[in-house]
Image 1: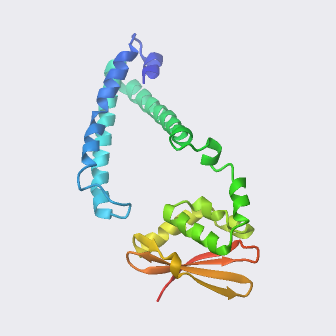
Image 2: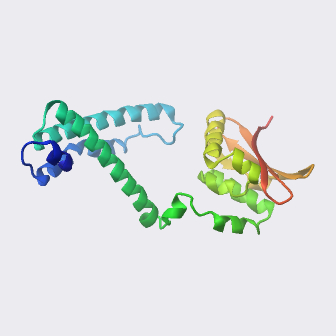
Image 3: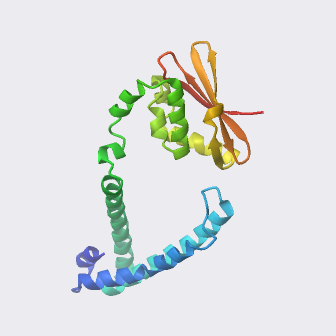
Length: 237
């Protein structure tokens, strides 16, 4: 914001003035933090009534904050009219992009101690080597745990070539989301109750998955190389 003011304002301004007024303009976020302690906070993405109420409050505080930020920018940078509106929008977008990029990089490399290349999925050789020594039962258990955690990329490591082409981690995530929206909130998977059968050249394993509305069986079809050639959620009658 200060840089935008320096570039487009015709008067001299101090960075401390811009920083102070911008900080004060973010006061609505403190009130939003208090709202998060109220029972209107949704327990999950599928808690629709609370989610709608919370989004309403969230948007209210966000709009309030942006309005205060604009006033702070216009006053501290001595701008008004179209010049103030256009430069404020541009500065806000640039600031958000830069700050969020820095936060993502810091959260990956510092707080979670994850190398940046692995965080963005550039290094999968280690996972591929490890899977070669696992049995299909061990792979099934890992797939179930990964589904419970929402780690869809870890599942695709076990796919064969055709599956990797047809079902990406994003596609798997969308399929899981669709299943949850249809069957209700995911509750648990009973790995102890799995069944194993042989169909043609495939070893087929089914694991019961329990959702709020109904039960589905996760079916995994393993080829002769121990790779997953099929993944389905079957309705249980």
